[in-house]
Image (cartoon, rainbow, N blue to C red; front, side):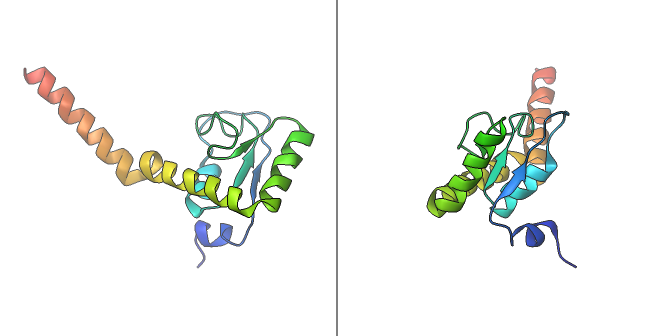
Length: 116
């Protein structure tokens, strides 16, 4: 059975043209983890990316969105660098083991403070 990363790996660019909604976009985290360059609306990347080109291309209008997709197709090196930064972001901040370890450490610190 194919996992999400294997399924996503055959695509050159992942697009997320979400115009409304809330919550963390797990689909973007999956694409980031799979090392696929992403283009999203700002709402689609809410909570994951604020700066265009850092972890993904960001655009809210059709022309800007298409421009960013084409830029990634035309500049594979830039696309790969952005995808690499996004993957590192997932590993550092969104991996379940990493998140659990951070939470455990925060609990330990709170217990230490309470005990004095």
